[in-house]
Figure 1 (cartoon, rainbow, N blue to C red):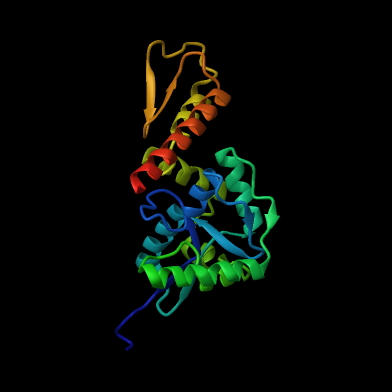
Figure 2: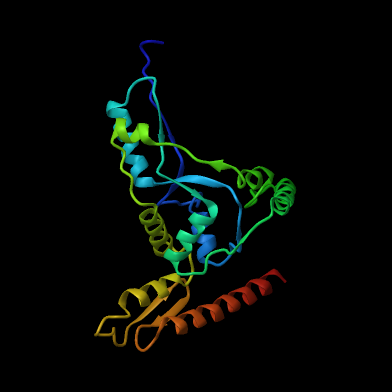
Length: 231
């Protein structure tokens, strides 16, 4: 209808805070926890969620009716984005490419598991296949027409990572974050302690290696308790 004005916006792979589920930010959590050992050979276009929100508001205010805007930023392979995430969260990046056949087999069993249990698997046959496709896009139209910002993807990763820490999605990382932030302070927090989801670190005379050892011990203890609860 000529009286019905429509403006379409298509965000790409968004990263940033307030990913409650989590959805796209799940890769940050998995890498921070050391769960991502390898990478698929495809790629995607990654964008800061704050830029997407700003562009959507602008599209409602002055977007051209009948136009479609791709809201994205940087085209990166999964190896590249995993390496950026690993650098920011302070862990080694995944080092090897996962063969497509192996991934597809895993996706098949993920789909089967989901059908049998009625739960959503982390990987199914569709997502396994998509990991080997290059989902690269050009957002120049949104940049020109909507003035869409292009925040560096590293900033989006850092925002998401801090939000996951603050909201308890990444156990123990809060302690390491506090240590890194305040390690260079001349004055210690004498007599004060920091708790993060059951993980404790004293700010007096501790370094990151000590904190990591403590966290590993606590994670092993959590696993032991979980196994006992299953009996």
